[in-house]
Structure formats: C-alpha cells, structure tokens
Image (cartoon, rainbow, N blue to C red):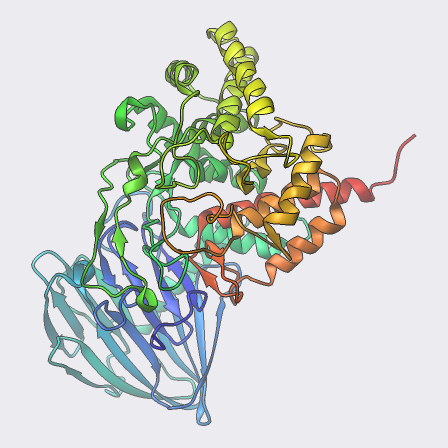
Length: 616
C-alpha cells in the first residue's frame, strides 16, 4: 500500500473536456479520455500494478519534490531537488476549441534542468479501458504509438532537429516505453501526449511547445481576469474558481462532481463511488458561486444546462429530473464493479457508473429552481418555453413532495421523509411563485402557495424535535443532519430565530469536531453501507456560512481559517477529511470548492457590515 500516494499529493490539469491528476513525484496516475466519464488510459491511482501511469522523475534514489501552479493558471510545475541539481516538469493541457467535443486531447510535459545536472527516468505505461484493452507499441526516433483495438495514443518528442540524442529508450515486455535522459543546466526536452490518434509520431520543436505554453497561460489569465472578487481570500477563491473551470465540460456546460472515481470515503471501506458525472445539485450551486465571483459566462452555461434538463422531462420513473447525468446530458449511468482492480490502497469495490442515478431525491427541484431564480436576478432570464416546462415541473412537485425519498446523501438503506428534501421542495415552490409575480407569468398560484405553506407547516411540526430542540434528519428520527445548515441561507428561517440558534448549538455539540463537520452519524442513522466516514468539507463550509449569517463572526472566521489549513499543497480539497487530517474521497470535489466560495463571500459581506461605521 506504500505504492499509493496520498490523495492530496496531486495537482490537476485539464482542457475543459477531461482532466489528469499528477502526483508530487511526477506521475500521471489518473487520466480518462476523450471525456471525464470515459474509460481510463492511466489508472494507477486505483490499482498501482494494473492501472497504468505516465511517470517522469529523477533517477536519483534520494530527491525532494515541490509542486505549484504557475500563477493564475492551471499549469502545474513539479520541481525536483537532488544533490546534483534542480530540475522541473511543467504539465498542462492546451485548451483550443474547447466548446467543440473532441476525440483528440493533448498533455504537454516540458522537462528542464534548472541548475547542475539531472537524469530523468521516463515510464509510459498506458492501460486502456481500465486495463481491459490490450495494445501494441511502435517505437520510432520521433516518439511512440500505442495502438489498441478501440483506443490509441501517440507520444511526440520535443527537441530541436540538431539536438544531441540524449535519451536511451526501449520497449519492455508489457509494451511500456522506458527511457532515461540526462540534462544539464539550461537544457530542455519534452513530450506531447496525444490521445485518439495512432500516429505517426513527430518531432516537435521547442518553439512550438513554448507557443502552446504561452497560449495556455494567456487563456487562464484572461479567463481569471473576469473575476470581480476583491475580498480577504482572493488567492484561495481564485484557485477554487480555476479548479471548478477545470471540472467543466465546455461543450455542454456541465460540471462534474469530481474528475475521479472510486476514491474511498474510508480507506479499505466500500464507500467508493464514481463522481465523474454532473449532479443537478452541483450545477445549481455553481450558478451562485460563479455569479458571486463575476463569471457570468460560466454561470449562464450552467443555467443553460439546467434549463435543458428541465425541458427534457426525462427523469427515471416519470420524474421531471434525474439526480445526475453524463456530461453530455445523457442518463445511462449503469453501475459496474471492476473486479480486476484492487482499489486505492485496497479499497474495494472499484465502481464505475453510479447506481444512485435512479434514486428519488426531492431536494434537487429546490436547488434547480433556486439557481434559475438567482440567475434571473442577475440578468440571466429564462424563455417562455422554459417557463412552461418549469411550471409543469412545479405542478408535479405539488403532487409528489409528500413522500419518502433517498435524500441528499444518496443513502442505500431505504427511503425516509427527509427534512432537507421537504425544505428544498418549499424553496422550489417559493421561487416559482416569485418568478411568476416578477414577470407576470401564468401559473396556478393558489395551488403553489397552498403546497408551499403546507410544507412549511409540516417541517415546523414534524421536522422539529422538542427533545433535541433542533431540526432533525427525517421525521422518524432525532438524528441531526448538517444539510439543514442551509435552512437560514435559503430564507426558510431567520438566522436569529430561537429554533435556528438552538439547532446550531445542537449541531455544534454533536456534529462539529474543532473546525470540521460530519454530515450525520451513520451509527445512529444507518444508511445501508458498512464502515465509517470522515468529516465532510462541504458541511464545514456550510457551517461557516450559517455562523456568519447568525452573527457569530469570530467563530465563523476561525472555523474558516482552520478549514483552509486542510487544503492540499496547491489549494485543492477532496470530499472528506479523515480523523488523521488526511484528505479522502474523490478529488478534487466541486461541491467543496463551491461551498468554500459561498462561505467566503458571505463571511466577507458580514465582516464588512460589522466593520462599517454606524449611521444615525
């Protein structure tokens, strides 16, 4: 198990259609193409021996590595320090024509010796289709071609025609390419990986790869310049925004929950899910966060993706929406287990696809309508046809909100009357009413108001525990649930209401450990799965937001600042934090970064208001 890097010991690169993870020791151990949800080409993250990787590192037995992003970009720099010298590998994916779905994708790896001398070892070991597709390898002076029955990949060498041939290259008995190259200070070589092509390999001149680098720098700096955020945590939020952009499938506007699959919520456990899909919930949250930072184009794309799903009315079992979709909007997410892979540090099963796709989760309707309402408030209005479909969806919700469901956490232990699902059903109807009034749209307002008010009354009676003095997870339990931290932010209850402040106090006592927050206690509320889990980073940022709205600014700020210490070395967050402080779960997770942005914006606003001079 020592062969597996820590989950947090990775940086992320991408081209807005797919992405790759690069370890702090220079290995690409996760890369799927041509899309986020395509089969893997490199998957050593989930099986060190059989998953495949693209490793580029010093041959020295002892070295120190450092990793950083080139400022304000998604270009990753991995630096190596040895007794003989200093070298670096610069990794990036060019982003040209990103709005057109492409079969070909490129990863550039620029290799430099900065000081002294350094010998680099190269090992290219693709394992197509999660290691299930064999390939042949064809080596030439200009690179290598890996060709399988359905998948192909080419490695082009970067050098000048007159350069000395420094590399010693061979193909091993598994069809992997291995090489060593010694560089002295000031020398540069490199490789360009190209998927979806069976060659021929060609020599790429240094000027060409430098232009790709310069164009990629210009793209990311130009995109980030749209940000209007000038608050206290500018660098942190900008890194989160870039990370979210990297997890966006530009042809459709969909945002994947994470670019990885089957990373465990407990090392050695079974809570290992495929997150390479677009959840309605995540797409909705992205509208708030990105509009809050001034990224209108991305927010409009996400709103458009949501509106398309509403118009389709193609949910499983006759529901208006599925809870998740593939990045292109299709809904075939059949779950299967890769029995031949051992899983990250032995965490089985390794699942691809997602069996929760057909679940009933009523909260998604509130999140979808609330984000469309928020977009409307910020100059992103919907169409007449869109309104008619939205009205049909709300009519469906009027007839279907009062039933058990699986809930936001996608439990596999049976349906319950989850309070959060009721809360967000209230939000859906409330925002629909507001949109109808604002724009004078036709709607059965009496029915919508009656159902909305009925939900409110039910939550206040059945969702409230007089014994716990708190709102609870569902109507048949007194277990607390941190998803309800959103109750004040969506306007259901005042942040200073006694019921709300006592709920916060109860959560603080039961779900909060220092700055970290559990989503619920699985031992007290069985979810149908074995094992435990860490604290949910999303929930910690929701807690910060709730504290700030309740006026507990000192507590909110120290909680936020402590949570920032759990970020990876390049500012990325996975889904959860283990008891040891290790990041666990799929990485990086969009929901966490979205909640971070929302919490920071709320905390900034509340701190500014508290510091503003009072006016008489």
